[in-house]
Image (cartoon, rainbow, N blue to C red; front, side):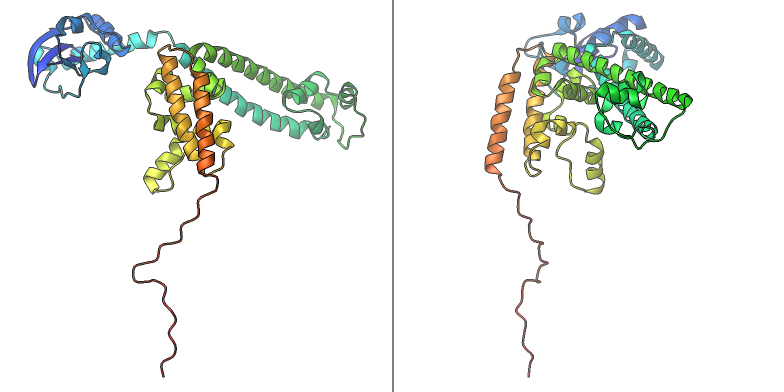
Length: 357
């Protein structure tokens, strides 16, 4: 016996024969609420009512009622129970309304924040380049005296070359040209905008740090809050990241290279966004694939523990990872030798023959 849940009811089957069934209500809104509960992983009252001992279930969500098994339930058709395609359309429309109105989970908000951070970084880089090029005509030496947000702050708040030199306590003769006050005011406005972008990025970083320590503490401690949030964003949520195999986690962020490998046969990627972690990017190139594979496995464990609110295990995972890296470095200290090109059959090395007389 196997328990099957369709969009219009629950069925207890034996082979391709329905033994018992429980149809959902005719009201599309009530049916949509039940389907939303199914998508959230809940067990319906109808499913508990039809459950029997030693049965199997077609949905892993119901593993508390029986052993999950693959089952083809296409023979259970809604037309056989008086339901039409128009009724299914109304149910799915109501289901869409329910899911859209659901509150956004915190891990998905963090995923949006990390995407917003990427957008801010791109804008900051573009505007910073423009500010350095424009203000550098007036004071080119400031690029050696201040960096990033400090550069923008000095231009925004002081502006005048001599005022900045007095503030920094530096005496030098600039080779820059002069700017009329009108042009300098415009440049200061650009610096003011850039400084505000830096502040927005700092606020987003603080939000991500605070949220990740609450949502995924093990993953944040194993990697870093920003890298962990980036993995969650790429996977589409913490729950989805927890369900991914470690081999997929290892390649998150390298989808273009992977598809290029599948399409054209080029070398497959060994790592995705986890390359940003020092364990991977500081390893020699011939060790990175093995390190990335091990790190992907530890990330999967940490994500599952965080998704299902387990105990803190980040320190244990770090120790295991460090031992694994030491083992890789000991076993593979030198780069692999390049294999000699294989000779064609029948074209082995032959001794040169002398001239026949």
